[in-house]
Structure formats: C-alpha cells, structure tokens
Length: 78
Image (cartoon, rainbow, N blue to C red; front, top):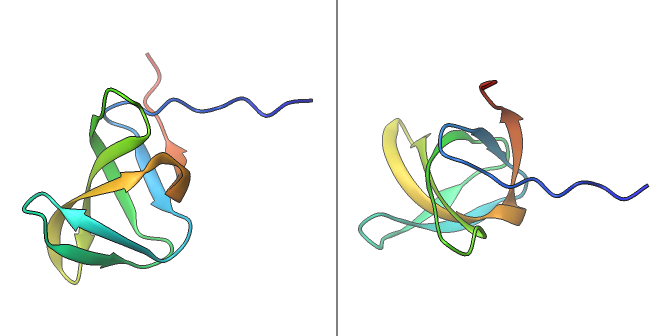
C-alpha cells in the first residue's frame, strides 16, 4: 500500500523531524532542533516550502522549511 502524500495548509501544526537550518522571515539563519513544533502560516505555490511560526530560543520566529523536514501533528477538521 502506497503512503498518501500530505499537502500542508495554513493552520496545520507541524513538528521538525531532523535538526534543521532554516531562514527566518528576515533571511537570518536559525537552528530548529528536532521536535520543534510550529504552525504553518503560509504555503508556497510549489507546496514544498512552508512558512512556519514557532518558538526558537524563547522568541517567536517565522522560518521557511521544506515539507520533507516536518511532519503533521494536528489539523483542524473542516
């Protein structure tokens, strides 16, 4: 049986799968440790890049991550 690919959408809660270097909204490099959770606030047209709001070192950060670097934790039912 083939695994169904998840298409992320705004509002999804995701968790970082591996230690990830990402860029914040200002272009600065930030470190996202394994297990960091965040909320998807925007999805690029390609659907492979996600803009995720999360807490990094006690600050709110908006990071750009690839969809294969995170997994879905929770999605509000429609």
